[in-house]
Length: 397
Image 1 (spheres, one colour):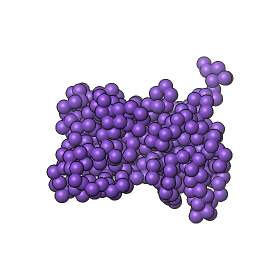
Image 2: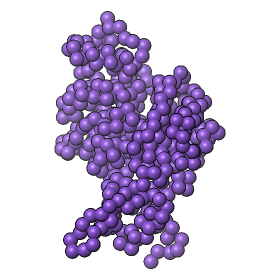
Image 3: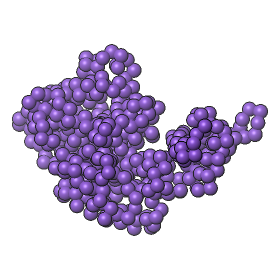
């Protein structure tokens, strides 16, 4: 028999189990929820009653049942509260407003001129003010704001961000943002945020073991094992871009050499292209450069074709290492650079996976492009808030 001191923990666990099932598989009847979660019918009835009273869920029609009364269907209430997702990028900041079922309602995109933490804080505050003004919504309607950043986010006591992309080392970004933003917020790595979005609602849906790859200027990964996001001891798991694939290879912004990111991130791809075709004129803008590379591929340019083959070899080697370590059943390729070259990369990388992945890990492996595209990190950042809500975090109630 459970002691009274553990009852609140059990109740929160039951609530989280029910909410996750309901959000990911709505509409559901009470019987569906009981059968899928293993919670007793009485427990489900009591929890649903509380959620209905609070306005978190609503009744949404009914479905017939054999030999009994129609069963009432339940679904999340889209208007319960609003969610914000923020993507901090090297060239832009994007903020998206969602309803409680992750339907996008508004988007703000602001240019970034430098990577100083205080400037990103100011841009987040500006984007929030613009969102509230454009929608006429009060700030207290927002359940929370998720912020996806390219780097390691330590949640041990103080929330500190280290981002080699910008030269940040243990920056107290949470404390800085709290001084400018009144809504509750949660900060985490952008690849982990994208992984949640793809696992719950996107190309990773239905896979209990998933690797989501974020390939842009930098490179990262999120890992789902047995349905749970893998974080590691200090929340730094997933820094896949800084695994070493070439001893004494290219220098990386992290200060090391031979990192995967230096070869398959956008600057690395363009560097490889220029190495195969020294006469090519590259735009200073990475996005424009990768579009030019894509155009050269479509024309069958020999230098671009050779650069793609080399990039695919490095990506295949890095991905094979990841697959052999974690044995995912599905790999999802995302990030702006990954999506720009996705149609070419997916085909070019497969022979390398055949060569380097162990047969048991290769047997059920499926690789595909992410579903949410350029909105993946914003959507995933909003999922971070839902995840905190499911867990019963008092800041997001």
